[in-house]
Length: 115
Length: 108
Image 1: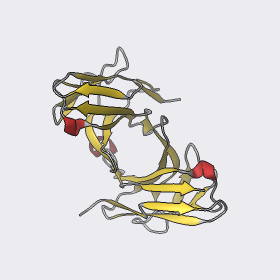
Image 2: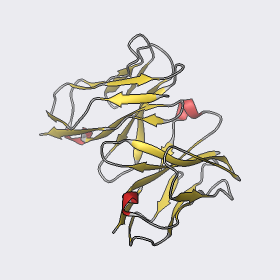
Image 3: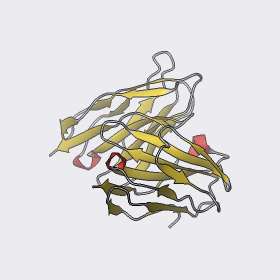
Image 4: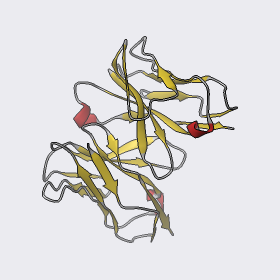
């Protein structure tokens, strides 16, 4: 099925560990973005990309890195995990041409706990 | 900057009750507005949308009308079901600004 695939679904890290959250889409969407969801705060944009080779920072980029070497993949890296990064992370994508008509497609999320 | 303010939850209703979840926005222009729904354990799904003033979005019995004069996009449903229990997000599409979410629980 076409859509956005995120892996893993759950992850527990120790403080200081690094890891990569994977995001892949098979809809040939130009735009991809990462959000974190914290209680009472909606979704906050971490990083986004408007196409392969292009990334930019969102509202809360500190502690996270991204790259976009292909249209399909947009991994999110935590270089040194901190308890403040405990959250649910969502990847989303959309078509550049018709974002207002079709909205965004979201992955099912990654629940990350940093202890 | 752009912002979206939603009615605070949680909201608990009985089955067949009338639902309103308030949403107001601030923006430099007239952004498209969305309601997204997140069912337990799942990602976000687009519920409905409106792209210009006075547009009414509707889906699954839910409706929302884009009111430019009050900068609002309130979500309504005439008769809720247990299966409507979820978290609802009002979203301004211009910069994908999310409201904080409203958790809705429907009791049988």
